[in-house]
Length: 377
Image 1 (cartoon, rainbow, N blue to C red):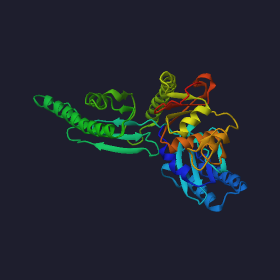
Image 2 (image 1 turned 180 degrees about the horizontal axis):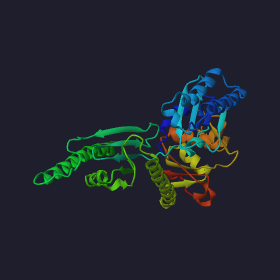
Image 3 (image 1 turned 90 degrees about the horizontal axis):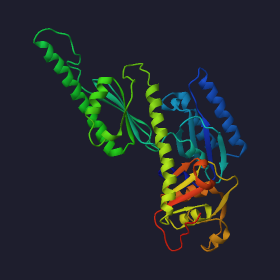
């Protein structure tokens, strides 16, 4: 996971407010329920001494669901607000948070956000009929889902039953029109694939349209195609089965990424290009060696690190920072590690604790090794 979207979060001077909230807006009394949840969150922040500009920023963002629009479709939302009231993170979550976070602290608590991000697997969902298709681009980091429509021609769209010599002419005209329309959709998919690099392209909708479109798939995206029955473009068509299948595919890709990451750590160790354990990972981050930081979703309770004048001035104890000639401030370990990863442009993967061998809370794959690199576990 590319964490460049967190750069403004860690650049903001503390303290900051971190809020993970349930903003579900699907019940009959949703507006009232959301107001009550937001009021409780604001009261908790007020008790922590949060200034009014920050309270107002949190309140206004979380209540956007009551104003309609895209925010009304969210179930979980993460908001981080700096001390001056500026919103430095506003992120949709995959679902209502499993644990509400309402915190005013010197450093942002973003690991719970990363645990519950809406699937950050870039993909395309295509719902096609014989005229065109609706395309949804999703999973592009901090960018919202993007919807596009490709419309073809409707002339002679239906294969009509006519007699005599005209019958085959009508049949071929309709089929040719479907193919022409599918070509337009295929061109758009190919363009998006080249630009965005999706992990999969889910095709749904009319069965004949899907068949033609799959046949027109170019080498750019032909290996990415997954088809499904169901889905339609007509007004009132049930989109839920399509969204559910897309979510299943995202989960499969995320699980594969976890498995591949653990295998990569073990494989790189043979060449001295991975380290495990807090001490060794901290040293590698300090030297800018980390290509991929791997954190478990459950970190050791109360674990801390020392941070100097910048996120890469990192130490397990003051002796580490004495060598740099700086004094360290105590910071929760996961926050310090994530800030260092962002500062060094490292990729971050969050995995279940049980997936890591030896119950290790943190590991790293390295860009390079040097004579001082200790790859032991």
